[in-house]
Image (cartoon, rainbow, N blue to C red; front, side, top):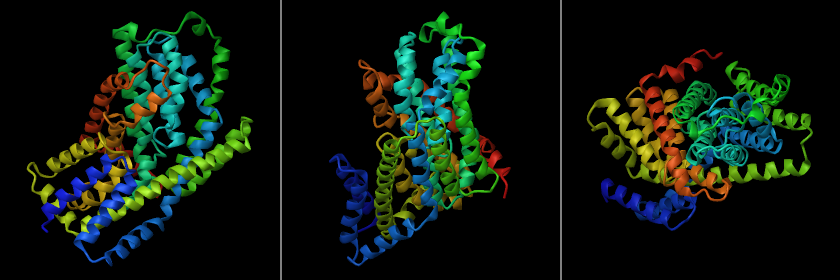
Length: 438
């Protein structure tokens, strides 16, 4: 059976099984087993087990549950509510200030949580009612929460960077530092859009009522205490990586300890909340591990069948040289982002793209940021767009999925524009890691 036919059957089987509603891990695993038995001797199943076993031995993988646990504890401690309140009282006089405060709060929480979706659930419950009560446009309010929540895919300690670093053998610490400037840049672009749109059309985002504007300056400064603990924790985690005194895994341990101390300091650490945080961490980590299992088997079988060489030959024969190939890769990411989650895209594409990127002399550290920008796009892209469904689950009654789809288009275009900037100017992402301590 030639590789072209194998590729068509591989993809068709994968899609058919996916449409049945089976979990993605089972779909990948089933596809690999089916083709392993069709194309090879049953002994090849041993190779699949070895691939999975080798991956699980990776020490870097420990960072994922550490940062997930850190985020879960912080969510239970009420830091997000204090953070949002501290930021929005200072932006109330500005039209669009509440939506801007949402973006800033999401960016700060992304630097604390690292798990895509956590901010959507949190600020969908906190910020949306506040914006609706103030008379914000439905699409303006929904879009700011959905777009802001996706920043966790780019701002460290993003879980996406951990798995990209493992698959591509790139320093996770440097990936974290590389994501800081692009993440802040994207948040600033979102805020700039919000403020400009609100200035052009004041009805979209009214300013705060007089009662909120008259909060004494002393009280506003007092509310800033809600920013102190998050700031210290972010500096401790990312600063230890930047200074070269801790690996990302060790920094994750620092983050867990710091989040527990934050909760103790706020007198909100309950044993039951700690147990629930651990249970949630185990659930998310197990889901990620099963997806790793499935992806390693399906890519292993496809590579053994010659699929890696087929993909490499097909892409290398494209016109316009290395940049033409890079653009096609972005199109593939965006297309897959409409129908799949980030980890499925990462595990299916990067093992195939990695040799090509190396042959074309693309910087894998820079490409990691490019990949995460694509995952930011996939996070809000219809029809799959996880952000849309997370937001629908917590949005006040009367807000439909169609409303959310309409709200994300301006932010989607802005994210694509930022992706283009990062591709054209690699130093946006590479400048800071080049300054890291060795």
